Amino acid sequence: MQTKFSADQLANPAMAAAAGAIRACVHCGICTSTCPTYVLLGNELDSPRGRIYLVKEMLEKAAMPSPQVVKHLDRCLSCLACETACPSGVSYRRIIDKGRAYVEEHYRRPLRERLLRAVLAGILPHRGRLRMALSLASLARPLAGLFERIPALRATATMLRLSDAVLGSEEPPTAGVREPARGIRVGLARGCVEPVLDPAIQAAAVRLLQRAGCEVVRAGRDGCCGALPHHLGREAQALMMARASVDAWWREIESAPLEAIVVTASGCGTVIRDYGYLLRDDPQYAAKAARISALACDITEIMDRVGLPPIRLPKTITVAYHAPCSSQHGQRLRDVPARLLAGAGFEVRTPAEAHICCGSAGVYNILQPDIAERLGARKAAALDDLEPDVIATGNIGCMVQIGRASAVPVVHVAQLLDWATGGPKPARMG
Ligand code: SF4
Ligand code: SF4
Image (spheres, rainbow, N blue to C red):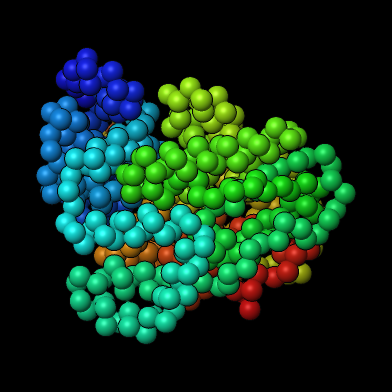
């Protein structure tokens, strides 16, 4: 696509990256049929190609974003299915990230939206605050039906319903089964939302890694990786959290080398893998961030590398595997999770439209509840059609989103692998 950015504009590295990505787009439209919002809404402006054009116009002209432009950019899930589909290798994430940051800087949202976004950015990335908010939400949950009927309170109702997903508030143990370590020292990223909503996931990951002979370490003061503010276009907050995370892991690396930094939430893994890019212009952090990005890997990748411990699955269980967008498009993990599950003795089935997002997408299901609900129902129906005993996925957001729309229990892949190799059966499976 032809662009007309000025030399001054291109002096800004993020603008130059976005401009380069825009130029790579040849407007072929191959990506449109894989875009969930285009599939649902049928509007070119809700397709990747349409959004690329909107961002190009906005950035090139240094224009004040209009409510119409913001609406179409806000509807993007950042699922990155368009990147997977694009034959020209367009890095859509560079375009939408710059577009979001620009909107955040130059557009004054209505008060209700500003408040909601401030609440999300102020609470979700902090485990303590989130725990407290969820305790309060449990008291107000009976009012969710009432709030649902008041348009101004729809987002509050959605948050109350999502808070249903909480299973417990215990910090996961760092020790479980202690097998003789094979000299493989790995870090396990703690994150923010996942350990609060479902601490059983990281507990299972620790057991699984230890059973495979890994020494598992935690980084002190390791919190939100920055993915949540990044989704909201709050780049300053996202970068601050990324730097804190790099510092936390750097201290750990300096004490002894790490084979990997293991992530159990694929949404976080996508962002941590991008630290090297996000902090590339910060002389103090660029090299360290690139190192952390290179070490980051999904729990399924490290298990693929070190090998599964002996399988002890009591019977054949049918698993419908949902590949999170952050796993299949963001990190291009391809068949690794499903292959591991099959290797652990599960009968693995994959749904139709496996490339389409479930509608979770960070905080999307709170900010865009109507589209998210339609996508969630569509995904749950496709998974339910497989008649599985359990649905497995690799991201807490997808677990919550699909769990709301399906009667089949939804668990994390790490929990199934832990169970198959001698750990407890996931509690949600009864
Ligand atoms: S497939 Fe790629 S090149 Fe074609 S319109 Fe979409 S982003 Fe542009
Ligand atoms: S990231 Fe997903 S929702 Fe956004 S334009 Fe690409 S395919 Fe569509």
